[in-house]
Length: 285
Image (cartoon, rainbow, N blue to C red; front, side, top):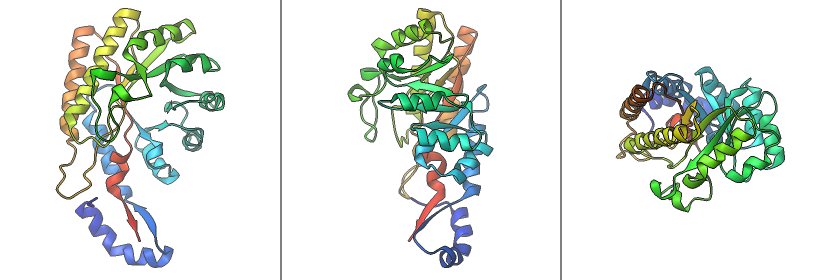
């Protein structure tokens, strides 16, 4: 993957000395470049009230890198108990953390609900009965099935074994309400390393539509939609970079329209990983 000219110029001046000091191989990351990408992401969505990026810890579970994300106002998206522990060691608590896991054990749920808890994101309706206690705020990972396509990397949603199906989603929230949930979010993850910004705009459109449908059915307002991550990075010199600003413009227009029509709108959450750190790291051998 090509480095930016700025990173290349700064790195080339010091790389021989670094290699001599630490030996090879090693990964080296550009703090300046990471912070610039974080700032660009925050700025792109600054017209949507409550926008928040939750860095996907599984993309790079490095405490030093995570500390940068924390400084930039990001939360953390975790999928395991060790990732929760890393996030909490940086003093992230409660709604600064989202926890999404697959085939979740009781021990993992207990870890997620410990230490002021987190935003619990369930990817299967059967997990409702396995939670030790229903938190006030609950989120479900929505799988639209045949209503949407995926991409070559993550696959087709209709074939996926994760996520609550369209036919189950209202019942999932209904059961949660019966168990004491009072606040709600919805999440999806349909693509990985996607370079077409329109795909992400349509993902936001899809979640806003299902939020409206659930509002009509259940009479509850959703606090947030989380369109997942999946923003792509160019791995070859001829690949076009992802158009973040065009994506943000399209999604902001959707939120403005939703709020105008309904008198309220959810917050927008995202959980990027490689998009934040990938262009700013290099393996030196």
